[in-house]
Length: 131
Ligand SMILES: [Cu+2]
Image (cartoon, rainbow, N blue to C red; front, side, top):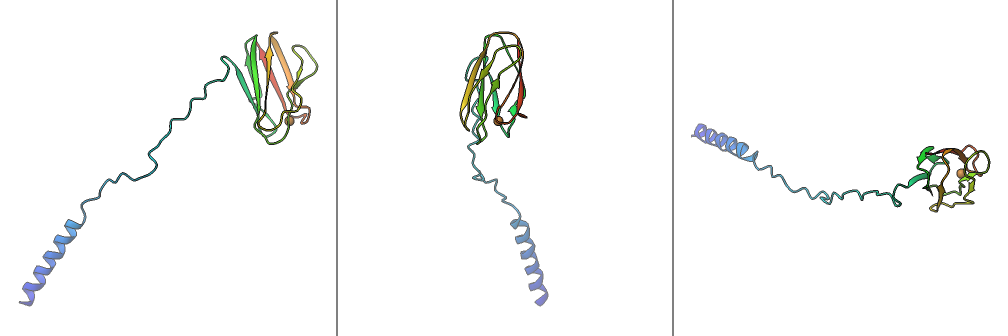
C-alpha cells in the first residue's frame, strides 16, 4: 500500500511538472510601443546648407554651396561664437556675436573657396566652397 501510494504520488508530480511548463504567454510587453518615426529633418530652406557650431568647431568644417545659395549656421554650444571672413578672396562677412541657440545666415554669390573663422576662437575655422 505504501508502495502504491508513492507510485501514484510520483505520477502526479510528473504530471504537474509537465503541465507546469506550458503557457509562456507572449505578453504584449507594455514596452512603449510608440516607436515614433523620427521627424524628417527636411532642410528649412530648399537647397540650403546648414553648419553647426559645436564644441568650438564648425561642423562640418568644409561645406559646399551653390552660387546664390545660403548657408545657415546654428550655434549649438552654450558659448558665443562668430562666423567671420574679413580678408582674402570672395565674400566678406561677419555675423557678430552669435549666442547659444542663435543662428546666422549668409548668402554666397561668387564662386570660389572661402576660409572663415570665429573671432573668439581663432582655432575654430571652416571652409566654404561656392560652386
Ligand atoms: Cu567660437
